[in-house]
View (spheres, rainbow, N blue to C red):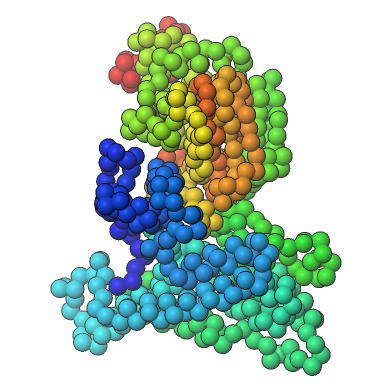
Length: 581
């Protein structure tokens, strides 16, 4: 039966690790053993399309592609859905202002979509079995059993719109997927002078969102462009779409009615929600001369960043003296971003850098992997609790261990204040990290120290999406990086567009500098290759949800409270700090 595809593709299910290669599955390894490099590249590419967060595979693809002499445009995704591929091609041509070709692909995507919808619905016409349903204990009549079966079939068919909007390997559908075709088309047809078709597509979009003011304005404008000989009232949304939407609404009413009559739970999802992890919204998405369009009377929807489910504010007080404001979101070409200097003094940087060399563990936070992001660098890390443990045991100065704790708390308060948050910001993870360039491996490097990613969702550059689903840390709300040194080469922090290629801002680390930003798909970021020396920073992730507070941080808070009382000569709490550590 058609259901949302497993988040692990069939290639991923066969994934294993090989000593010869960084990370390949049996298909990849099998084809390589047979010296069939092109097929190995295809297998790797198919895996990566379903798992874009898998950075090791991305590096493998480049290696295999070079070995096989395969161009990027020749890569084949064996699990690709034709209508999704056509849609993506349409978006790319639209963004390049190639509207005629974009129209061709969007129209092809719609034909493929409706064909896939028919197939999906046909596959629902079979035995159904809901996991929670007690079939053996059911004492309903024959008529009730028949009704129950057909309601389950109808639920399956109704869910096809979600199935068709979901890319292989993903749990979440592309939001507002089908309406977006008509949104793109209405403006593309306008740009090539086909006003009747533009009007048809705009009215088609309104079948999903009848209260969209911008598209309503566009309808009026398109009608004003038509010849007087054309009957404006005769131009309606396309018949196939009108029938599709009508059927979908009738199915929804049937399911709600049946749920009451047959006593099963059914909650109608919002299939056409108009916001989410996309850069293109529900109006005319992009690629337009805004000034000229507004003069001509066409209502334009600006290209918006992904929606953040809270009020966006910034510019609050920095609350500490000597901190220097450098850039805000606008100056960093993004949303919810700030760059500050002098958060640490030179002396504090030296002290932290000194203690780092004694507490860092290779591969900490990455299951002991020496080089989790790139084979050309060594990665080391340590948590606050570990620093305090070393301090209590006398392996590092306790004052230095407490400095790590104190400066991370300072950073939290700055972020909470600057972004003017109405609720408490909690730590979700605190990590002192160093990246060291490995000698003899820096020639002709074209990789990154940390690949482009987002902190609370899975960045999918091909789909122009950021999927807020596991294994992403979806509870993270804000991030910050506090730098300790600058005596290295490379290692610039960069923000990019959702394509993970177009750099929107670059930050050169130095002692006391802090970059902070919201953790979602609106802020893809990464680190350029460290080509010489060692780059150290305190990485901080925060959450607004107390359920996801960092456990080690809570333990560290308790240890600090006990140490403070010991220093004051009071022992009212009968807890040994060693027990907490």
